[in-house]
Length: 204
Image (cartoon, rainbow, N blue to C red; front, side, top):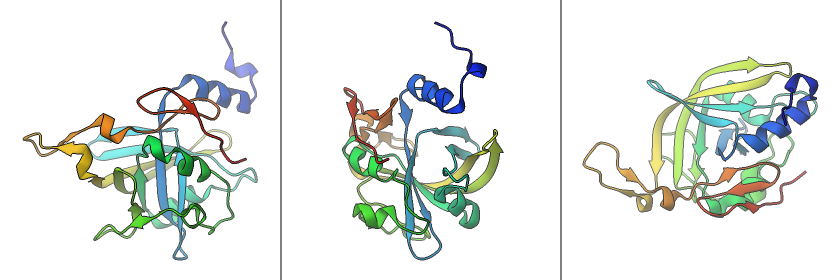
């Protein structure tokens, strides 16, 4: 079978892409709403870009009413954000944080998620996450007809749980992939870790 994408509607193209570009790492992004509350949302169109400067990319869509999603708007307006690599055991909270809440209503509060302060950084991190990247906005590129926001962030600092690291003799420790057990997205409501795939019900 060969499918010509120019004959498909955008939702069908999206469905094809998320079922074939797998597994996708998840960026669980905490950003500042600007009113003493925090937004927390997952994105799986995410990956590294360069190491000089150290940058990551996150592709963020729009709401159904075509307005920018909260994460996009927060990063555009305030610059700083924290990108977590969630573990398999965080699948439920990650999926629930994908729910579309009114602007300013915090997924952190709604999900009962515990945060931890990061000294010298304007934002906290999710306490249970074993990896957190402290980032600032580097560039935002709008792509496509919608358009989609390609957020490029510069990584300034990385938090690593001591339990997933061991000395390497170099500046960077050895990081245990099995200790991280990172959560990844497949098609539909399916996820995987470093073991069998499983399904998590996502909010409408």
